[in-house]
Image 1 (cartoon, each protein chain N blue to C red):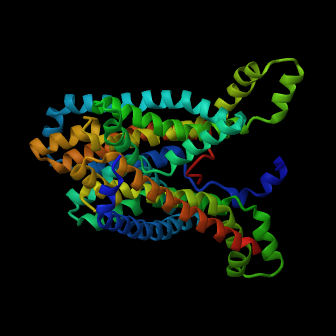
Image 2 (image 1 turned 90 degrees about the vertical axis):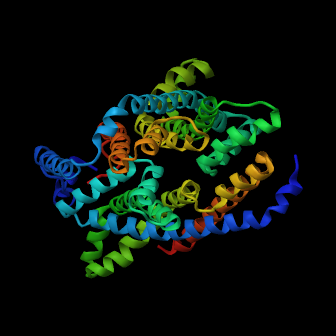
Image 3 (image 1 turned 60 degrees about the horizontal axis):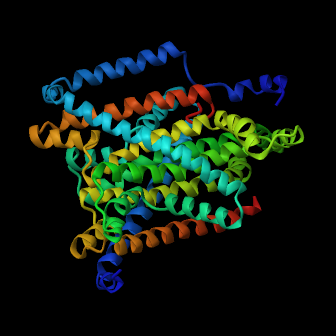
Length: 257
Length: 210
């Protein structure tokens, strides 16, 4: 749409958001009122347990970051296999991606920790099992993100590189992938948020992540209001930073208003 | 491998499947209705409403489902099934409202303007010009949202709703046949999501008249 036409649309397309400072002020005021309302909760319990909770948060982030890194590597391979692979490999990649994506995440954690070890006669500790399960999940979801990113690079670029005499691997690594990575950044951050939220499900197998740490503190000291509020606020805070990043990279990504 | 053992527990698996189907179906309907309401409130372009809805969506999208579930069960004191259902609806409605808003926003303004120019009323423009196009545009993303609901319904096992994953864990604890139990459950989940994909695809084909 040309600039002139855009300006005609202004009354319709106009943003409904007020000035940034006013909005921030109103939300800050609401937050302060909320803080005043909950001032009598047992915050001393949370304060005393803070080192333990922070250790749990560290475990959550370790799991999220490691599985996203592993998932990004394997997901890139899967996406390449799905897009450029020969018949058998392509269908194997599609089957894997679709199977993982249509299975509940808890089921996958269950598979890795309870389902497979009896068959192979091995015993997995909870933490490695959690990392494997989260990496499997991340690889399938990120494969689709990478695939969308690869598809977003115009075919002309690949053809031009080919015409310029570059070889397949060089074209992929130096021409297509860098552009794809830039285009898929918002979706990638959205999936980091998703994986970080999924880490709370390793509750099933007893890894002491942030969520289980908070539940353990609550079982010992019983201050549910303060602890649940802390849990919600910490998860929200971590992810809000990330979702703000998404909107910086791509203002149209979500919550367009 | 010991499949006959699983067959002995078919009643438990079917009961779990029934719970999963019921809570997923209710949560799909509920989150679609609530998400559409939220999306509609944003489309009114009322500044305060938009701000409130955006705030709600931002909070809901940035916290894990299990946190909402435990909040409703242990703090709000709801029973297992209602807290699971409400948690699923609250969780997914945020995403669905984005789908709805984006669907209507992506229709070019000419469509409504042409409708008005032809003398249609506001309601006619909405029903005959905008709704069919929005429905067609939102069906693919709504399909993945509904699949998310089915997958997320496994989380309600943590408060003791006896759905499919809960029963799978029970069976695997009773028989130590985790692999077989997980295989059966996974196949059932894949079947459920395939049914949703099939249903939504044929719905999309019916809407071609738009």
